[in-house]
Image 1 (spheres, rainbow, N blue to C red):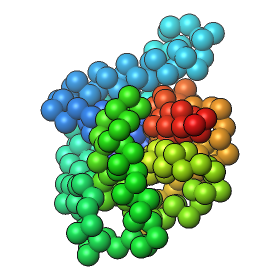
Image 2: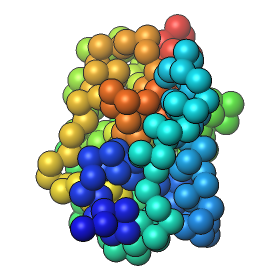
Image 3: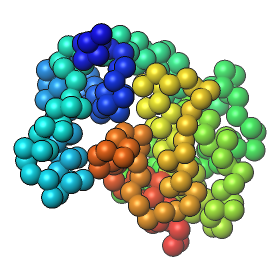
Length: 236
C-alpha cells in the first residue's frame, strides 16, 4: 500500500507529522493541500535544524523527505479525517459562549458556578493579559467544573485562583479540541504532557500536542495563557 497517498497514516512517521498538518489546516482552513504541504516541509526542516545543529543541510533535507507526506496524502487526510472531525467539533457546540442556560445540557457542579462568573468578570478587566477571547466557552466551563476544587491549594489569594483557573481551563480545552481534531476518542483523552507542565510547574516550554517526540524539536506554543496569567497574578 502506498501510505503516502492515503488519509490514514499507516507509516509511524506520518502519524507524527499529521499533528503538524492538522494544526496548519485548523489555523488556515482556506489553504490548499499544496500550501499546507509546503508549510509542513518548512516546519520539519526548521525543527531538524533546531534539533540537530551539527547536521549539514544535505542530511537535514534527506531526513525531512522521509517524514514529509505527499500532497495527495495531505489532501486525503484533510478530506477523510480532518474535515469530518472539524464538523463534529463544531456540531458539539462546546466552543460556544457559556451562560447559565447551558447548564441544562452541560451540567456543572453548583460550587463551580461562582468561579466561572468571577473569571468572566476578571477577564473583562484584563485586556493586557494576552487573552484573545474574554468570554468563557462551554468547554472551558466544563474544565473549570472539574478542577475548581484544587484551585485553593494551588493559589492562596483570590486573584491568583481566578488567573490560574482561567489559564488552566483554556489550556485543557485547547488540548481536548486538538485531540478530537486528530480523531482520538473523547473518553481516551491523554493529557500527560500538559499535566506535567501544569501540575509540576516545570520551567520548560509547554508542548501542546504537536511535538514529534524523540525526533524533532517540539512545536511549542510559547507564553501559554495559564503560565502568563498565573505568573502575573500570583504576585498580587
